[in-house]
Length: 194
Image (cartoon, rainbow, N blue to C red; front, side):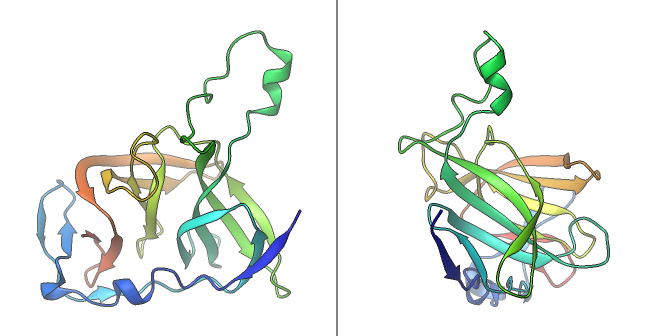
């Protein structure tokens, strides 16, 4: 497997603004109000990732609650079925979870190691609603912008989801329909979109 060094600073500069830049804070009831200053996300340390991973978004934060940060990535990569499907006659429930290029979207939680390698903490299956961007709130909740495979990875999201870590994966806390391309955290610790 080919690896390459990827400095994961993809979203840091884009999220440093606020105010008149079109950012809207998302309140717990789903209402949007103009956002003030944003908290810039911490970028992940450089990682050697497989060349066929398309990292769409990343943040370095403690999403698992263990007291140390993880690299949380929104990745598109070649679709692979569950290994267990080879022992069943039933069709796989994730067959449609891929785009026209054959890639599927995943949220990955990785612990960076000193040499640029990483330890896999958690990796989700091919998502039903692909994640196009993500961030982590100060309380450790994962916030995702979710699109559709038909519209593609570069299209605006159709929903915002907020997720909490369960120790085994993530539980959906809330989801709102909205259109956005970027997600960040406002000065009060709420999600912000534009």
